[in-house]
Length: 161
Image (cartoon, rainbow, N blue to C red):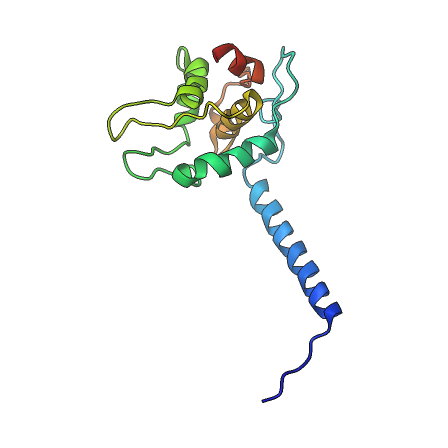
């Protein structure tokens, strides 16, 4: 049996083409979560905020690293893990909801099998704010927010620590 020799240049070209294809696929999949014409909220800007914009890329990255193992694509996984579509906004809009969402990340919840969430006290204030923001603008949630909704900022998280 004879083996054909592959040149080093052919391998390099193949790796570059594969990298470009993977990068394009990731860009397309990440783009599905951002509205085609982002609102001020989706861009992380509120009407009267002094904090810099929320880092959308950070929110997606932290969600993928810390939350996706349970929440995956925002869909429900039984009673223990409810769908994030609608629920994140419902909790945000409830009285004390902004603080409750921050506390969920910083302190977690302890409850029965159906009411437990891990805490993430090691995340930076910016990472917590960005991740909450990601959940509020993904899976169709942004359409459920009122026009005057204010993003949760790092300063809001810092005040809850």
